[in-house]
Length: 114
Length: 114
Image (cartoon, rainbow over all chains, first blue to last red; front, side, top):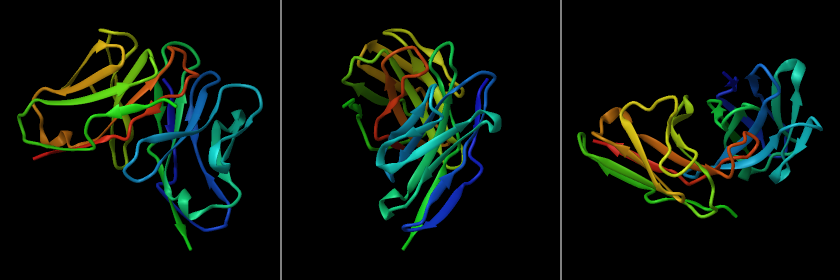
């Protein structure tokens, strides 16, 4: 069974600084990987996804993520954080075969300081 | 855009009540999911359905049941609500059984059991 670890519960970044949120997964084959964002009081919105091919994927709102098979990681990055990026971020992994179930990490809450 | 609508944003019920949470999607998606979200635990899958009248247990089905009589509607039922079911409940849908299809989420129902 697949699993996801997001080692950082909270991260604080200054506005305009770069951001990297960590995600490590466990799965025996090539996984399907997703990053979602949740603003306060809202549901989850898809930022980006990786299925195959280019290991650097671009998403919405200026986010990108890089799949590194050797490190079992799928870290989310943004070169310059805006105050509106303050939210909770979830990494999720899906199995490449069988029914589509996602396993979510426990989330990282991003705080943006002025 | 996919629209997943949860009938209530906030709900307060009493211990022992039977509680219904409703979810409707407007994109003819085959799959629908119910999660609960708790601080520090991320999203945990309660039940999912890949077709009308079909349901499968997720990771934490105890104390819950579901109903899918129509393709667009997926109901979560708390048979006898208890205080430990106080949580945020998120509904999601996706178009196919394949794992590479992202899930689309509603805005959530924050349920309090007194």
